[in-house]
Length: 103
Image 1 (tube, rainbow, N blue to C red):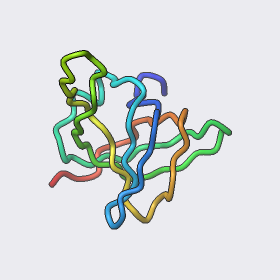
Image 2: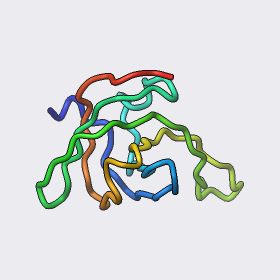
Image 3: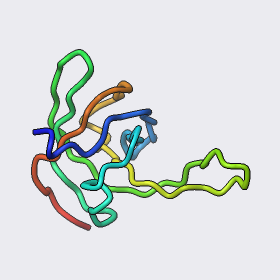
C-alpha cells in the first residue's frame, strides 16, 4: 500500500460543522495530482496501528513559508467528513482506497 500514500499527518484541525482538516508533513505527488474538491475513500493508519476508513475531500490551504519575505505557500490538505473521526494524531498515515464522488 505504500504506493498509495497520500500523506503523513503533521497536524489536524477540527473545523466545526465541516470535519477535520489534515495537514501533511510533506505533500506527496499523488495528493498534488488530485483535482480540488474531489472526494476519495481513504484509510487512516494511526501511530498505534489502528485503522479507519473515511471519506476525505481535497482542499488547498495557504501556510506560512517561514522565509524572510513572508510569502505563503499553497499546499494540498485533506478534509475528513465530520461524522467519521473527531481528531487525528500527528504521524497518522493516510492511504488512497478509491474515488468516492466529486462536487
